[in-house]
Amino acid sequence: MHAELLKLKTYPLFWISMVLFAGFIPLLFGFFLRADFQIEDQQMDLLQFLAPNASSLWQYLIFVASYGVYILILFLLSYTNRDLINGIWRQYIIEGVSRNQLVGGRIIIGAAVSLLAMFLLFVMGVYTIAQKEYSGIVSSLWELQAFFAGFGLYLFGFMMMALLLNAIVNSTTLSFLGIFFWSLFVEGIVRWVDPTTLSHYLPVYNFNRLIPNPVSALVGGGSLSATPEVQHVLVSLIWIGAFMGLLYGVYRKKDF
Amino acid sequence: MQSILTLSGLSKNYGRVQALSDVSLSIPEGSVYGLLGPNGSGKTTLLSIILGVVRPAAGTFLWDGEQTNETSANVGALLEKPNFLPKTKVKAQLEMMAVLRGIPSTERAKRVEEVLQQTGIADAAHRPFRSLSLGMKQRLGIASVLLSNPPILVLDEPTNGLDPQGIIDIRNLILNLASQGRTIILASHMLDEIEKVCTHAAILKKGELIKTEEIRKDKKESAGVVLRLGVENRPADDITKKLENWAVCLDVKIKDGYAIASFTAEAGGASGVNRYLSERGLYLSEIHPHRASLESSFLKAVEEKS
Image (cartoon, rainbow over all chains, first blue to last red; front, side, top):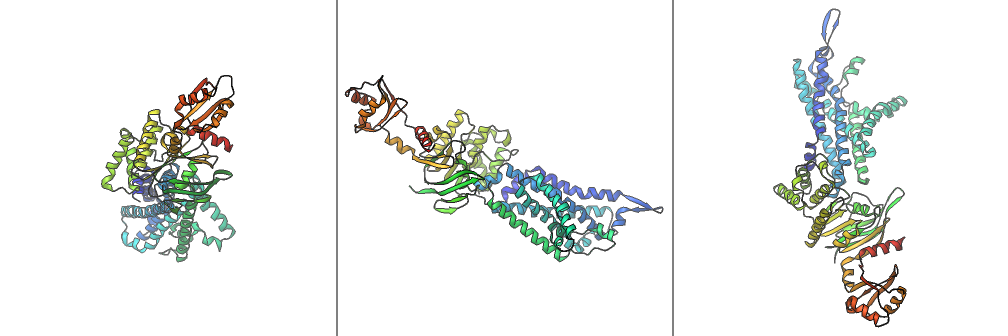
């Protein structure tokens, strides 16, 4: 892990993706912070219309930040493929590092990046909410702690899925497009064919339900619960476990 | 001599291509063992398997008597080409490798400096890997291998891309390391390199082990003399007939119209052979020392296999 950290420190895309992720939230919220609209001669602030309190604003923040997962996936894939293309994993194996240690190291980086993203979301969220002078910023997040943890699991799940796909196709571009294709088309088709049973056990369907979706709640007129459903957490954990197990299996047999 | 590495029936195929076929051999501890063969003979595949980067389709290997599918912790290896990050500086790469090898932090900087000096790339310490010439990259690879002073070295074409002086430097370095009691496994397609450096050699062709040979022992046995003999206007057959019954003549054969014969030291060298034949009515028009090298052994083995 020490050698891995030294290597990570010198990898520009790591720092770029972290800055991008940290900048992503204020950038999107900058739009909301400035936007206002008029209804019957009454000037309304868009953000306060959508999120009247700090708790609902956190829900929007987590939801919006979840799209930053693609930045993190891109970093992890390119970091892994840089090592593979330059024969670094091959050299590490020659040096006596086992395949399990290599895969384990990459899983730890995925988990660490998820935690770092959660921290960045917290810092940028507090900053963004403070700009609008909401009250109870931290206590409102405490109410949503399960969704906040779900956000970390969501990032980690997507990254494990991307790593597994990359272990099979060995390409950053193909793996990245594969995640899109799977999320938008494959699961979409399955949900269209079977909207009730099978589709409820698909990975992306369950990952998406680990985070709040205030937009659909707003459109549907319903209210959001404060925690993700246990069923989605369990299915997501099973999928993440399966992705990790398969990742070990693929690399155990792979020639470098 | 105790065996440091034993291969039993190693095979590997890439799709329909049989890269290695049922290779079994034993590498003695303290030897400089050469793997000799043309490009595509399976040398790198064999080394990749014993270093754990490629999985064999069949067979096993034992490092120091222990069956494994990974490399030994005592091995330092350079396989095919040095693997480093292109934009990272030479010294930083070696420091990363030193961390990986478990060299204590207090010794790391000193050890990195030592191997930089030892391989002659100290001047390039602050240059990124991608800016190095092929020869310097190769030296960096060897520097990385030497970091932890491993007792076993595996080097795949270590003089690839080096200029003549570089080749001599690396060869001397290998001989120096071997003199310290290290076991060195060296793959090369250059006969000369194997012959000058190795104590043992295995000849591979199209993934098959054709022959194993103890180079130094052979040299001692033929320490007498090997001569190429010719008589004007007479067939080489006449010479072989005269020599066949001479007790000090170990072997005689015809090649390109000449008789190639090896003698023990008791033959008295070229003059002794000339005297013996002239006394029997054969006056040699040509008598030259013939180099009974690994080259002839290699070519013979390859020809026989073909």
